[in-house]
Image: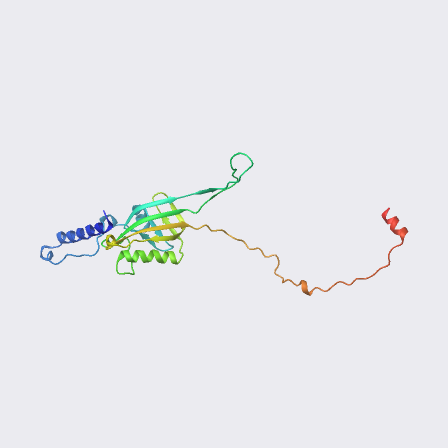
Length: 224
């Protein structure tokens, strides 16, 4: 089932629910009460409880973003093992290090469905367009993200690329493929040897004082 069909089903369900739950005298006119909101979303006071239910989200320092649907999450963890050829036999390995983690999200956003948190996908005329522009801003501003998934949590993740096809199937929503890559940081310590400036050019030359060489007997006695 395409995302466009899913959005139409959500919209039809919302209209029917509003019609049958409204008073009899208003059923002919009241056909809209805003985007559809799943009943499981009610009664969640904190983002932590939302994370346990949704399982997959991305977060900055102060905002947590949830998606309407997560069709696929691909985890890639790789260990790099060095190889050095020797005269005989297989290559030897003397070192191994962890490569940056990579994630691939295939997510869906429906314009007929409400958002889990208020004002999380705002700024454009539809929610799917707002979601796409928000992801673009996070990528262009190089904002490190914390990513919560069912398998493991990741920190220091950057959006590397976003693939967003736009055709008749995504007329009322969006389907995006987002690639994340972990950034590796290191601490560098700066050591100052001396606070005084280099003044070697101001050093005066020494004074050479000639002296009388010792006699041969004195030299031989000294050496002997």
